[in-house]
Length: 172
Image (cartoon, rainbow, N blue to C red; front, side, top):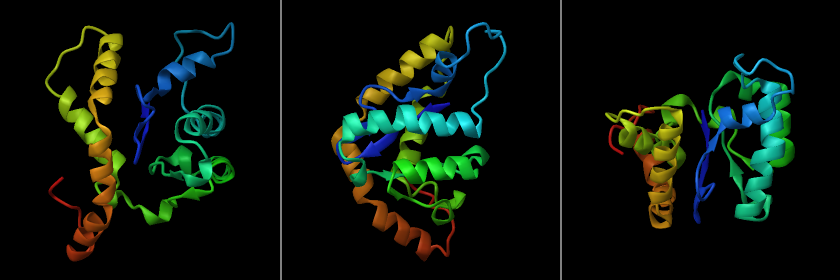
């Protein structure tokens, strides 16, 4: 699982998206079975937002009052604990009710994930480290001007959804 964002100054995190599995391993209690899978629960998601996302966003983007937060429709992100954490950390956010799954292609970060998937398609990786390095390299290639163009297109993309009676946009 990856975590990242888009801004008018480029991608957030500048050098790589956050690999959530790496973060989960970093919080594993000493003595825990390292072969046992750690899950991204709502409690861990809230901690991740408070301790990782907020700190990096403040460092890279400055004042969090100018940041608009959006997550996806995952169930753990809809728990009261997660919603309260996001509300406490990010004053401005796109509310879950305002971005139905069918609007996913309107929001620029979803287009970034789609671009990365296309770049990864058809490649074989010898291990997870190689895959992560490939993702990091592709992430760094996404320029600021592309991010700005994607953000500038949001109103036109929303109009396309309205013109198509709420149906998903076919072109990207």
